[in-house]
Structure formats: C-alpha cells, structure tokens
Length: 184
Image (cartoon, rainbow, N blue to C red; front, side, top):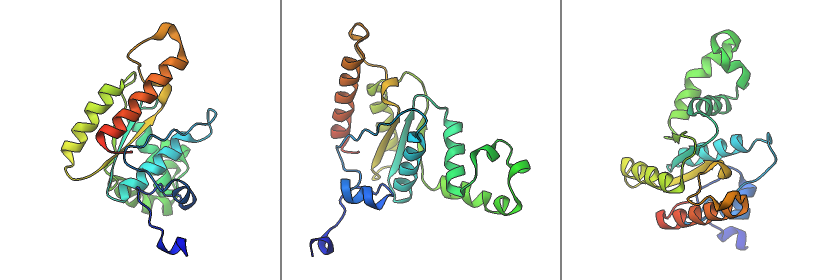
C-alpha cells in the first residue's frame, strides 16, 4: 500500500530502479558516481543529462576531460541509437534508415537545452559562476549540474600534492554549491 502513495520528489534519473533507490536527483544533494576507467561513466552522465533536460530542467555539464563537440556527438549517437564510430562520417557510414532519423535525433537532443562547459582546470568557484549565468539565461528553470570528472577540478589549495585532501576540499565545495544553488 505505501507504494501506491509513493511520489518521487527529485528529478528523474531515467532509470526507474535508481529513482526508487534515490528518489531521483534532489535539490542540494551531491551524488558521486565512481567506477574504473572505460566503464561508461560519461555515457551514463549523458543519459542522466538528457533525461532531466527532457523533463524541463536545465542540464549543466562541466566536462574537464572531453571537448564539448565529442559530448554532443555522443548525445546524438545515444539519442538516435547510432554506433558512435559511424558518426565519424555519417554520410558514408549511416544506413538509409539511420539517415532518415538523423535530423530527428539532432532535434530531440537539442530539446534538452544542455549547456556544456569544457574548459580544463575549472575551479568550483568558476563552475558556480557559470551555473548562475545559466540560471539567469533560463529564469524559472532549475539547473542540474553534472561534472566529468571530479579529480580534474582545480582545487584552491595544493596541499603539497596530497590528492586525498584535494578531493576532500573539492567534494566539500561541490556540496556547498549544490546546497547554495539549491540544485542537484
């Protein structure tokens, strides 16, 4: 009976089991997704960003490793269910059926209003300022911030190269940003 009265509070992740476990993306929360290299973290992040974009939120992506153009191509590939390798030369490698849905995939991706900032070595303060600009650009719409990836954020203090202290500072600053901006 409690399931009948259940109502998700946060923005959808696009994955029902994850929504059930986390109640979606909630204001002021910091969520860190970790995995070994080449496990698909960036693609999962892009899936999350598209889902919240289609729900009317404004996805803000800070990509400290990958250029915005590469992320855009990945977004289009996943939306149209195209093999990413074929997008290196769509006119040559896409099938006639895929070429027909190509404009639809681009249009659907565009409707997400994803904002991508791809400067390397950004600080949390720079991310906060850019997010505020996005909030001013889309008044009344809630941003949801995605960062790829945490250890490439430039810390304020170097801590004599102590990575643990740097990540602690960055995590603390990100949590404060989520709380202050009231967004996930």
